[in-house]
Amino acid sequence: MTADLVIEAEGLVKHFGATKALQGVDLAVLRGTVLGVLGPNGAGKTTAVRVLSTLLVPDAGSARIGGFDVVRDAERVRQAIGLTGQYASVDEDLTGRQNLELFGTLLDLGRAGARRRAAELLEWFDLTGAADRPAKTYSGGMRRRLDLAASLVGSPDVIFLDEPTTGLDPAKREDMWEVVRTLVADGATVLLTTQYLEEADALADAITVIDHGRVIAHDTPDGLKRVVGGQTLEIRPALPADLPRTAAILSEVSSGAVADEIRKGVLAVPVADDAAMTEAVARLACAGVAVTELSLHLPSLDEVFFTLTGATHTEVAA
Image (tube, rainbow, N blue to C red):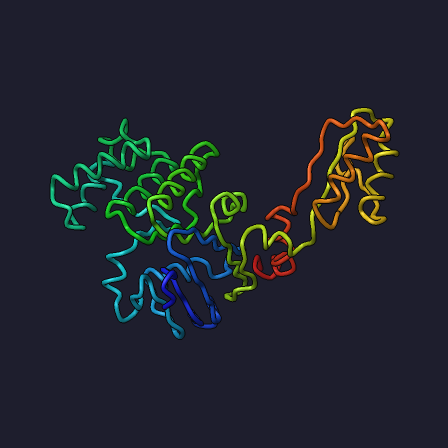
């Protein structure tokens, strides 16, 4: 195992009858970072997480967590990890506090330690007011937060989050993002599967895209965005009458590309590099064209995802 790699998988294969869930998946996560794993439904993301967290034995390949083999050293691996799956795993007849204290007791924190850790997590996840209510009375979002809190009772070094914000409203999703950032700042290593592309963009240091059980791309978020082309320059002139002149200038700075009106009054053109923006500003000023919006950006992660997997979406859905 490479010294700085905390999660490492090589050639993972897992079949369920005729279904080839994993077909030689390689994964690598550096210490203290977040790896985002993206892919359509049925791509193999959850199967990979279940293998890495010792819940499934691979048919072929190997994986190590913190240097421990997920098959031979499964017990040591479980001591080092926390897992939040797609579905809440808490006991609905117990209160939120009792659930967390139970996990603390099972993890040998002792009664006092379990109570203290439960109180910390209830406050962190904004569940103190509902701490003594049965979990079955919680909303879906509250159960999700309780489930994530339960996975952190033992302060694990490695955390697997399998679509952790599913069912949360945008505000609570942002709260969960802050939790993940805090965990990583404190030294944890996170593998995150998600279908919210903005979530991967906001949290991940690197992204692996899986489709049909295979890794089809791996890079930083910005690196993946360059897969679908360079940057785009967008400009909204202050006066609609200046749209033709603005379009002409954009064409000049982009080596002849035609500027498209992507929204009413907003023109966009692909450009090769950052210098195009500086040149456009200078030419617009010289032409006396005032602008109210000006931006230079890479393609969105949504565009990358569609470029990489869009041709197979229909097959996956089928």
